[in-house]
Length: 334
Ligand code: UT7
Image (cartoon, rainbow, N blue to C red):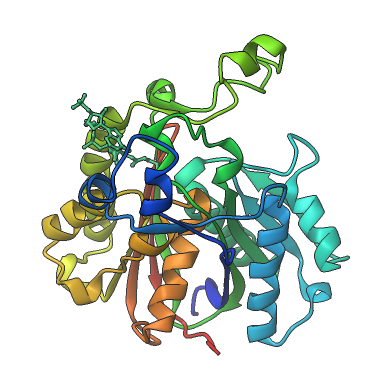
């Protein structure tokens, strides 16, 4: 008997129209296009108009996925939103998305795993489909990073952008679908990348605002070294466990935080450029949005075919690490 697998049956993406280039940032902080491009690979990022919440870009991506699959929001059973920039601390952004979409039958929740958030949410959603209890699960990765960026801190404000992606998970009985995953947490890394203010540890006060604690803080070099090591480790571990090597991978879809991190993993696995998706030059790091946006880029470039072995990998704040192996089911993309 064939095992029931969760298949990605639709993809939707959304980035805001407004673009912030490296040249624009040169006017705001002491930086240069050359520094940003050579250290990160980023050339521009898309940013929302101030006041646009994460739910809005999440809903836009979700609508695209539903339209492509030809189903209505009322057909959804569950909505999971991966984000570190929820509209509010509570209720969950998933509730706001459920209401805006009119997904009246769906329950939902948010999941916080920073840059690994989409992969954790994808894996979580897949369990509900594989168990047979849910037929249609919408997994969204969405972040409005500009809401928590300090435009006086050149070491972080140049790195991030806003964006969202959504995938629909449905059951399939053949070879295709989510094959396996490998996730890790190393909570001792929490101090290297975080937003200290606004939670129960440092509730918002005049002092926390004055101390700029409601912005993202990062010790970039430490995170960089950890990410380079863990990207390759996580991806290779998952491949090995499934009796694959880098040569079996048709497409490597990595979290887009720094082109040097992606290329280090690419070279370690011996993957040619044609097997690696890179769109960081256009969007920067959109946190939970990067992997579904990268799936969108691959579909735009006609680089995903039914039966392809797709490896998804991310490392993020926490530290969180995740890899997911997918046998691509094929989606309509118009
Ligand atoms: O997605 C979540 C996970 N996050 C990541 O994966 C990010 C990982 N980290 C990185 O990608 C890199 O560490 C950064 C891109 C953040 C920084 O690159 P780096 O090569 O590690 O630079 P650095 O932090 O060692 O800084 C080198 C120099 C410093 O100047 P001095 O001390 O050498 O004089 C910084 O002050 O570059 C300076 N610098 C900048 N210069 C121009 C830092 N930011 C900037 C900037 N423009 N925006």
